[in-house]
Length: 294
Length: 242
Image (cartoon, each protein chain N blue to C red):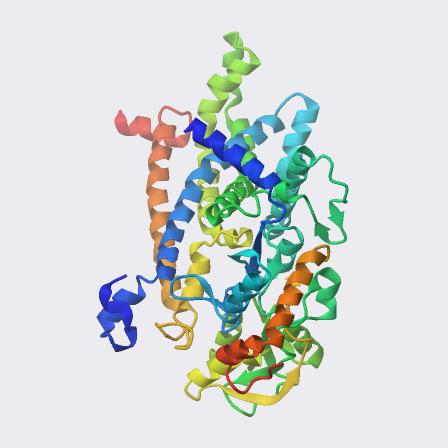
């Protein structure tokens, strides 16, 4: 990075640190913070959408749809994350490749499953075996987003399902009395009011999601915890210009500060959202706000 | 922009069709096991296997790309086709051979060794750390000692330094530089143990054509002595060569 970094062994402590902290490997570490933030920024709304769809399905009057929604919530919530992340992702990847295989190589005569191996024609690989590394990285990133969204969507669905039922019955009766249809009642009465009941549960989920990013490495996405472990491990002079002992504690300390700061910011934002949602609601919070203003 | 996407898609499709010969071979490795494979300061895969793999690809006239992955998922990802070879210091064992195929070994059967803080550790009954899903972990489990498994090699050594384990059991080639650089804190204890059938490249069982290519390339490196030179360069003068 800096011109004086050619022979780190001769440098003073400060210059050594400056060089050490700007190696290509450290750049990947800093870059991973961005990856994690982008992942969270995309996953959170997607998971919420999955959750909303799941909850709406679960409370549907059409039995198969309701069973589907309830099944989704129960199954995904019950399966351990780590198992889900190992098997679902490989299954999803193979499913995609199998479909593409049927489409691009219709006259392929060998079986797709040969013993332990899963073989599709080269043209059906997702992404293609010869695509650039960034295509592979982007692909695994979006597989990660999708998997996180399904897992956290199931938890969100459960929270939202409860929140929809927590909207006071009197509100719904009033809506019906005004002649609103089922659909109108749902979108105009239930949905706007349910968030205040859902938010505590959803904010919990968000906190858990923030801290579950180490699962990313199972999907081939290098996250900050992976890099902290890799960089912090002791390094012998033979394999690096910057030998050091076991520094994992310092790296994890940095992660600790990052996660705590991130959690704090989330709390502040969520508190504001809560205050906004409580406004005018028939809850103790809404009542307190009304009195404070009066 | 739309046009660009269209052209790219068309290109990708035609390239895919015409690509049976010039496919890129993706080389899966762990990147955490020096001197076999590790990430250098630039964050690239480096080490004995990087140099060996690049040379093998040149000799077999293949285009190769390096991929790092978690050790635990290294075999499932190979058989499901996320990369085409495993070149990660993986010992050839009968159990693994049932699931994947190996080339001939490119490192002769090597010793595994115990390393501890003091010389009087009893490796037969103490707490021994080893990396999960390795032949060393299997050996410790059967030896009667208490096995402490870790996901990465680095953690197995760290557990000895902080007293969690009495000794670590790993490939001797991996431990030698660590012991030498420890300034006397770590020492080899007990006898070395010969495990496995050497280190080879792992491939899918159905991929016989690719295996034959790499096999031939390894053979040619054995024949002209370049493999021995490479082994000595990365592992030192004292190790077994071909």
